[in-house]
Amino acid sequence: MDGFQGKRIVLTGASRGVGFEAAKLFLAAGAEIIGTGRDPERLKKATGDLQKIGKFYPVLADFDNPTAPSAVAAEVSARWPALDMLLNNAAVQTYKKDWAGEGLELLNQQWRCNVFAPHELIFHLVGLLEKGDQPRIVNVSSGAGNVQALRTSSDMPTYRLTKYAMGGMTILWATTLKGKVAVNCLDPGWLKTDLGGPNAPGVPADGGQRMWEICSLPWTETGKFWYGNKEISF
Image 1 (tube, rainbow, N blue to C red):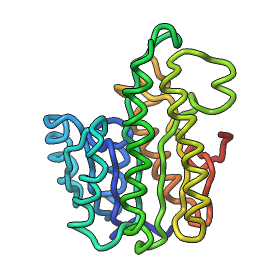
Image 2: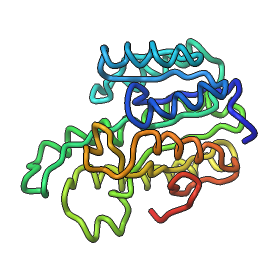
Image 3: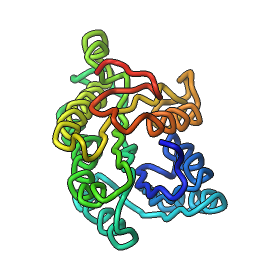
């Protein structure tokens, strides 16, 4: 991809962390962004900062709500006749030591935000993406959810399992949309965000840069897992 000037981007979780940092980069490069956030005050503040850089359109959306993906898609359809990039970045995590510590409810609660919502956004927006310019989808996953991590670590099991599922979903959508829309998975790294916690070695700007890198890969790259522009294993 030569650049991001004029690109129409949907970015979930744009009000903080990796999403906020990525939004700054894409806006500075001339893209337009519809960005979601679940906290009204945080989204309002982020919008003020991002609109100083470029064309940022906020949408309040809590992906714990089953109606949120279709509502976001309706906002996108009302603004643009086509879409160039869907960045499924929003996710939640609650740290527990193991399955016993989590109980049975956490998996049911967080599967919606971490897996169902990204899938439903793709489903609702695929028609607009197919009309876009070298359209691509990036599903933000985590190294915590690759096969090797599942074999060696049993903490935060719901988060790990949902991110593992994100990889499978990416492969299936990439197969479905081959030659039409590039679909890839991103590990932004372990970062000092609300989700990653204060002990992480990286900072949100690192994740924003890796989002930029994966979106700068050749459009023909699809169905793969990336750490920025470095391919890694699911």
